[in-house]
Length: 396
Image (cartoon, rainbow, N blue to C red):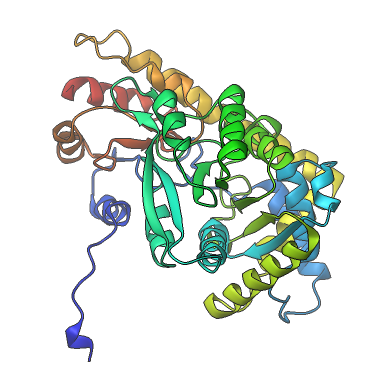
């Protein structure tokens, strides 16, 4: 039977990780993998999370299933973090949240529910978008369409083209949007642009599906949630997939959630039943550990304060690396402009060099990035930024 299978092409980022591991050069730099790293090149456990883990070790008295919706305190506290503590939508009966195994699990459950609503539903994704968005959506049978998002020449959002495309999207189609810290571009919508997207959705009747995986890493916890809160306050229907991998450092714990806003409480109950049914057939029950840690941190005022301080330090370190890299690359002899790096947000940006230059950086200098030139700014630190800058300037 298995002889009928053909090899699946390796994911470019995973292939890059393998090549990096096999590279024996001591000064090699990994700008491909999508995890936060500190100045020592490590992905640390947050102190607040570690304290919550010790407390959980003392207090936890069972390892039984949580149920398909997951931990209710986690769902409530994460929803308050994303939508705002006093947001009336949370108590309106039109809102529900289901814990999911990471942001990917949340996206898949959301897509499964969408796929059950009508024949041949379509989802519109921006170009470019996170590499796993389209495979996740395609697996549920959704038809994939695209709208313009990023101008590779100017390194800015091509918003006029984007909004014109959104105006043509039919009622009840789905539009996938990044809540903040756009992956892979780092180019985020401004508050005014979010309001225009919201008005267009309200007028045309398409339903936004927001992926928010980096809340707190852009302009801060509150600002990064602006778009979601604007849409939630104005639209009858909304889907949000969230992740705690980055802002809590819980990558391997697979901690996420999918939230739905519906027209009324009866529809909400039906939607939640379909989300639970989808979860049951995909993974049955969500993992507990990460969700219990997040719930503990958000539910304890001292731990939450400590977490917010830690998260802000992560955000500021990433921004510092953006500023320093831009400073070191600007004024180069070729006159190439790298100023977009400074103004974009989150962990990622496109460096904007050629594929040949990417290959040279990897082969000659041990600097690893994907062919699109997407770089993880959190892979840069005070110890390697001079070497990295020198290498880039040598190849451009």
